[in-house]
Picture 1 (tube, rainbow, N blue to C red):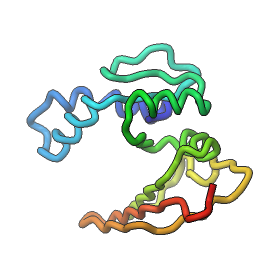
Picture 2: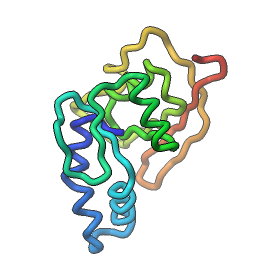
Picture 3: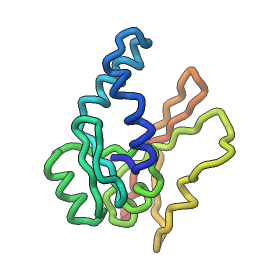
Length: 148
């Protein structure tokens, strides 16, 4: 699931990369994967999409998200899109959070906790951490016991 901005950035590159076997193998494999999975773009303004297997979700509410979960019968991954993370956290749909810490200091853009406007806090517990050769560290958190 993506927000409009993230979706449009990815749509401009990955469908073409999925047809370009000359790119590095890991990128080509990812391009093939993302090109062939079901995608949902949450947007009130986007009217049509070009990327195959993409659905537009114009109204994010419990019923619409539940319908997506029922239809796909799979986990929903949110890539970027802090506004969607905020909405799905409020609706109680997020079971795990993956935070990737990049070895850079960003100068602009939305930050997750600036847009996360919750009525209450959520306790998390660290479930896993992965350190990559690039210096990126990914932390996987789950809802703590007793958290709604």
